[in-house]
Image (tube, rainbow, N blue to C red; front, top):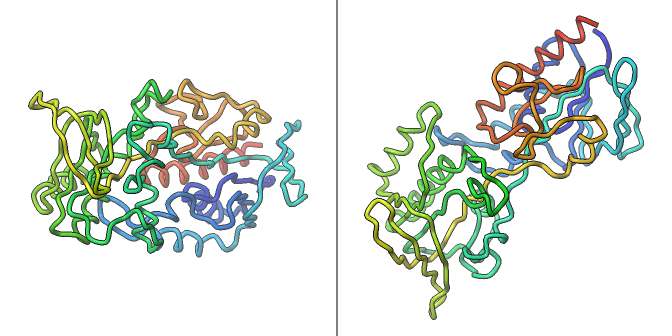
Amino acid sequence: MNGNIVIIGGGIAGMEAAKALLALGHTPILVEASRTLGGHVASWHKLFPDMSSAKNLTARLQSEISGANIFTDTRVISLNRLVDGYSLKLSNGIVINASALLFATGFNLFDAAKKEEYGYGVYDRVITNSDLEAWFSGKEDRRVPKVPESIGFVHCVGSRDLKACNGQCSKVCCATAIKQAIEMKERFPYAKVYCFYMDLRLFGKKYEDFYVNAQRDYGIQFIRGRVSEVGETFDGRLQLKAEDTLSGKPLKVCLDLLVLMSGIVRNRSIEELSDMAGLETDSDGFLRSADNEYAVIESNRPGIYYAGACTGPKTVPETVAEARSAALAIHSYLESL
């Protein structure tokens, strides 16, 4: 086989690509900035729509890439173009010459504190989807009441929002809100649970069934309307103001917990690295694919490929499929050299 393959990013995209490359006879080099592999999924509790364990998925992937060269707690600090590939210097001092690169650098979550009207960081009982996932996984959080009587979920926080400089749909927020609402109903069956949404976008396999089950089997109430204001009452509860756009009436709801579904935004930590590689970015700030129909995993540079949410919001199945596709494309590219 021809040359080194460096995978930048050790989330499920990077791990799945490493697994596929190992099966094709390569020994990829995986570089992850965090101390552990798994990316965002490693901090999730369950995956929609089957409510399977996220930790089981990341643990299985990690066990299947033991043959790769893995560097955690390591960053790529410089990247230079060579005649026949790329030279990378890592933060641990190692220099690697690679024939092919895979960017699997994922995404960031929108900073919910920027939407001041929702009170994140101001009111004790306002948390984000990421905070709630950590609580599901056993992390203590004093903001989550012992026995909440009413819980609200606000969709599209920082996505589909031009004022937040992110007009794109984050794709997974609707299904994530439904998943988290179901998990809260399972833990607190007598609590009233509300989802405040703009539009429900449930395009994936079994997602619509997931939504129907949330209403029919769990009694979760879905209210179409943008939340305009969140305030705190004298007894420490939250008062949420919104307009029910289906009925055309304003409403007020008192809540014991409000969960903000922070949207997906580009991973800004790789901007310098992508500039070094001469990679193009799209209007939404994510890395730009060669095209959005037939070459989503290809970049504008020879030997550089993409997988997962570095090019935009992706579900787990999409991410895994792109990782496998990118591995095959890299294999074919190296065979052609």
